[in-house]
Image (cartoon, rainbow, N blue to C red; front, top):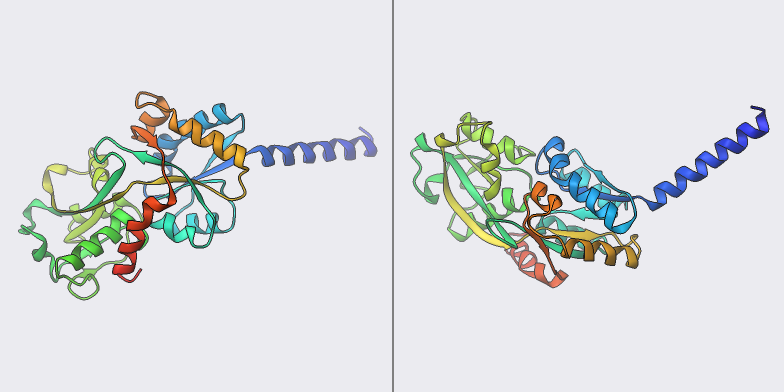
Length: 276
């Protein structure tokens, strides 16, 4: 191939890849679990949305909460699936549009956190946490810190002074493991994430000490850079899913429901109540 043809071929390849990138929809999921687990859970949803929209939907997974939030703020994601607290925080900086609300088997369109302890800990109720070593997921984890901090405050315990808060564990699995191994006296995780530890730890040795209040479930939101027609196509595709569909079964969801930004005002009010 002569130089002129080579340059033409390279230019064509570059242009083609540029079009492909422009057509790609990048979907991020807040990494509350490992990348392997999230790929298994949300890969089928990405495939489904690819078929429904006619555009390739690529699952993009960040290493931690901070990296995910940076991706959203930097405009690297077209779709973002995050907990309610992270959503309202990001909404202040980015004009995210909530498309649909996730629903699950246990709480439906709402979810809550728990305090998990060992059965042999001797702890019987919330007041027994005073002075104990507590471990949480992340400061922006709604059901892995925020809900628990609010619950402690409502029941007369200051999460900053009445308990010993250990360094954040980054993942819900790590919190449960720390409690199981007695590296922490109690941990705060999302209610349904305890069952996911079956086979990893002996759950018969753990118990739920208390349940937090409920909050609206995760929204799947669109970046302002996603065209309105594509947003509408994604919303329509999400809302027509049924519980038996592979995309929902894999994600351990039962449906996506209609949602508006106003649905998350209770989260904003709770955040103000605890100074977040």
